[in-house]
Amino acid sequence: MAEIKVGKYTVLSDLLYTETDEWVKLEGNVATVGITDYAQKKLRDIVGVELPEVGRTFSIGDSVGVVESVKAAVDIYAPLSGQVTEVNGLLTSSPELMNKDPYGQGWIFKLNCTDLNEKVKLMDAENYVKKIQKGE
Amino acid sequence: MFVSPLFALEEKLGANFGEFAGWNMPMTFTNYQEEHMAVRNGITVFDLSHMGRLRVKGNPNELEELIAKELTKAMPSQMIGPTAFLNDKGGFVDDVMTYKVSDSEYLLVTNAINREKVIKWIRSNSSLAVEDLTFDLVMLAIQGKKVKDIFDVDQISHMIFKLNSKFLGKEVFLLSRSGWTGEDGVEIWAKPEIAGAILNELVQMGVKPAGLVTRDSIRQEMGYLLYGEDIDEETTPIEARYWVFSMNKNFIGKDAIVEQLKSGVKKIRFGFKMKKGLRIIPRNGNSVSSLGYKIGHVTSSTFSPFLNRAIGMGYISPSHFFLGYTLEVEVRGKTYEIKVDDFPFI
Picture 1 (tube, rainbow over the protein chains, first blue to last red):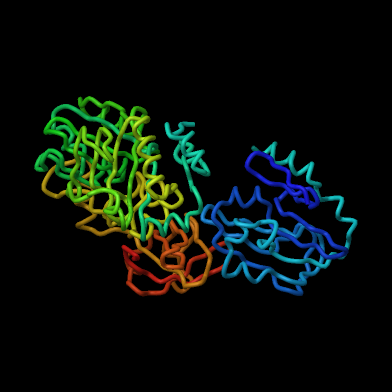
Picture 2 (cartoon, helix red, strand yellow):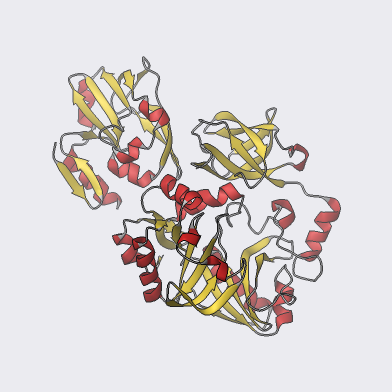
């Protein structure tokens, strides 16, 4: 997966992105979700996370949890509608993984998507780069 | 926005910058947990160029009238503080550190956010001459448990300063045995090129550069107050439990303080700890309750890497200020238990 550098931020070419700075990796119906490198750098030191419950269903745009940093607490939103099938339990004791490896070990939850047509509401890497540039 | 003269060097050292009180300053270099623990267990250096540094000259009685602590009894080279400029109601115009150069000359360090306000306050309440040194000098704080490993701090006593001194062999305008971390250390004021060389040398010696996020978590462990969050023009030293005044003299705001000492206060600053392992940080303004009844609010809070729990401070009704008592704080619509505690937390 190619890395795109936007100033000090990294965007991965093969992921999809939300307006609220979640990244989405789609494999069939399963979406793995985390927060982007841009989001973690804006939040700075992450000290906690409220993970969604496995089995709960969410609609696109619902708040599913909270990322707590020394600077602020922000909601994590469902990028697509679906049911949570797995959460990254490592984050409970090591939330800083979202800072250290936002696209890897810092993933937050997996969602079994119920409507893949919603994909059109997400940004590709190129458009997410534009969003970051606009925000800076 | 103002930037530190050391901006370019700090960028090379990997600083992440952010806005604080109108300055673009290093917030972290690596992450605050590492930097925080380096203060408690090692040595760190902070760039504090954003803090207001003023030289005040003139009739000593005039400054004595403006400042809440006694200045004239101190010896030259002695620091007096923290002390404060108070308004007529006893509220904080600013809390400051004072450095007595001579009976008629003092140096002051103000909060960054209040630099211009303090200059105006002094000018409008006295005939003292105020010179702003903030943009001519860089201020560095070298702080940490192991500061003695790199500098013989014992050559200067606590709360004493030297002018035109040397630090690591380099000429500095001011060298003081002081800090705001609860650890041993020194603070220096120096010309930017010298301060840059000192910062470089310190980093090469293994001293960890630290940013303002760390400064905030460190000061909260000690219960030190931050202007704008924990104190302001509506808060008095009595409410803040901040002993910045002397009863042996007159100063602006004293009448209001005397009145509060006689009749009591409606709010009092308290410290709190959240349960271990609960990684929730209350924010400024979050309400504090007892048995569901609102009795106060949070002003500062952070996650202490040293204690591995969230800590904070705020104001509550004095009638509920029992050490060890459990109160509730509301964070984003949920209620969490907090235990009333006192400072320092470590």
